[in-house]
Structures are given as C-alpha cells and as structure tokens.
Length: 90
Image (cartoon, rainbow, N blue to C red; front, side, top):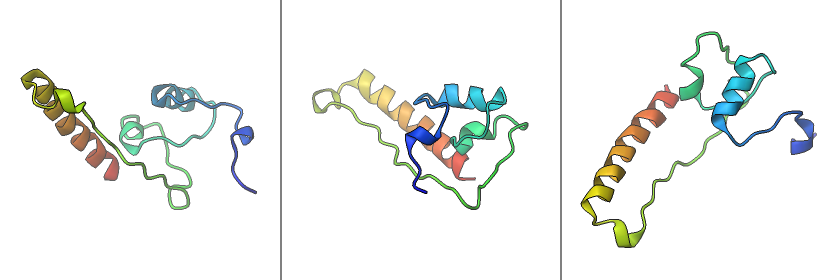
C-alpha cells in the first residue's frame, strides 16, 4: 500500500510539534536523529527499515552576501547547522 497523508491521524510540518507529540505518547513518528537523541526515553523503531535523507540548504540574497553582519550571521548559521547535521549522522 502506498503511503499517503490520509493514513496519518496527526500531521505537522513543525519538527518541535512532532517531537512533542511523540514524547506525549501520541504514537510513533519520523524525526531528525539529532532531535531524538536529546531524549533518552525515545526508542528507535524501524530504524533499519525506514530512513529519510533531506538536503539542508543555507542561502543568502546575492545583494547581501558581502555585508559584514550578514556574512557573520551566515557563517555562524553554517557552523551551527554543520554540527547539527553531523550529530544526526551518528
């Protein structure tokens, strides 16, 4: 059976809401590993059968890429996101 949105009783585009729903006992759910490992009460299920890979992009408008404050923010976000993504890869 193909997976469709109609098969799910609870759907959200918010990572935080999804984690909170799973933590509250609503059921199982897919989430970023980097978020899940922060709660030792969460137990991986189907980890060897289901996996999601999503690209992570960081972009800045071309007109702002040479602005010192924007560059500093961009570099800080890039560093933080790199750490976040590598945590989830473990």
